[in-house]
Image (cartoon, rainbow, N blue to C red; front, top):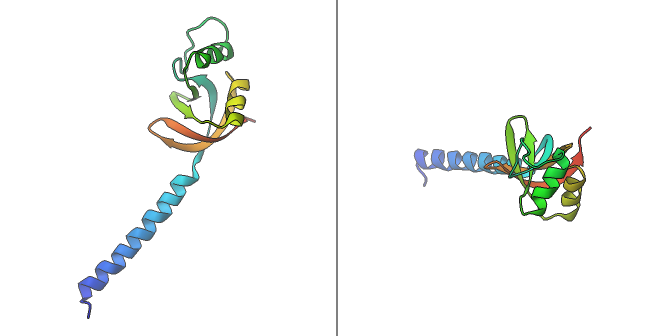
Length: 116
C-alpha cells in the first residue's frame, strides 16, 4: 500500500513529465525570424567592395556560412537543404523570413522565403 507521500510524489512526477514534454514539443516546432541575409564573417557590416549581396555571395563562396541579421543580432544559418541554400543565395542582401529552431545564435533552417 502506498503512503500519502508516495502518491503525492507520483502525481507530481507525472505533472512535471507532462509539462516537460509539452515544452519540448513547442521548442521542436521552431520559430520564424525576419531579417537581412548576410554571411557569418561580415554580419551586419560588409567589408568587401560592392553591395551587400555581392559581399555575402563572395564570403559564402570562400567558406563563410549564411547569416541572418535581425536588428542588432546576427544568427548563423545552418542548412543542407538545396532549396533553402538557393533561396539564401538569390536573396543575399535582401529581407527574408526564416523558419527553424534557434540555439546559441544558430538557426537550424527548415525553410526560407522572401519577406513581404
